[in-house]
Length: 230
Image 1: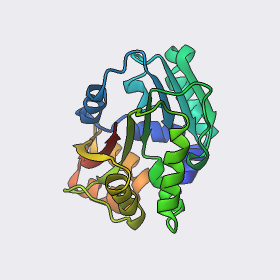
Image 2 (image 1 turned 120 degrees about the horizontal axis):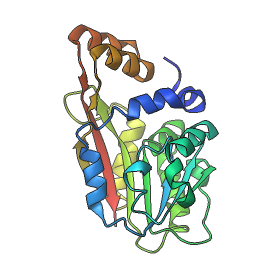
Image 3 (image 1 turned 135 degrees about the horizontal axis):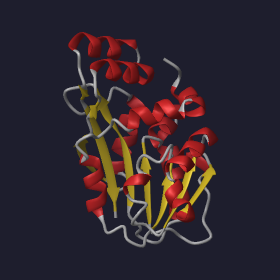
Image 4 (image 1 turned 45 degrees about the vertical axis):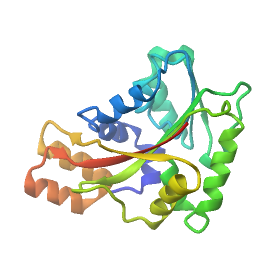
């Protein structure tokens, strides 16, 4: 199993295989689309990756500004979203140094990216959280909706994470920065248990792969948290 940052640098195709199997019941897709009327909105997205979230909304949006720390991921994102190239701007940027736009955006969205930033800055999570949100406030319209999507556990029977850095980040969002948490099931579905084991072990390690193989699982449970602030 490669390091997660190594995956983002060199394995966008395997990453796509993972996220394309995720949320097979479309619970997250429905939730995002029902949060607001996306028609005509300009969207600022951090950690856009290969465009997994963007695909759910870009058809309705006026424009999407997408940022990611890895050019490799952006290259795959550009391919995935090629039909919408005329309303898509992609650029490399770290979450702690997100660029300011010439024109403020209507809404912000992020998925499974801030959590990595918190893990890399586990000794100063309050300061990094404040830095990110302050930077975003300068590039978003006043009272623009903010949507932060992060993990609440994969291959587990109940929502929750063992990571102290993630738990600290989530607590700050809810208790200091005014975000409301929504918990969703975003299970993975694969055509065979062999494919499930192959894809999941690449990202989550041998222990999960062995359990999937032993139980011959084609559906892998997952919980996702969506933190929203209007």
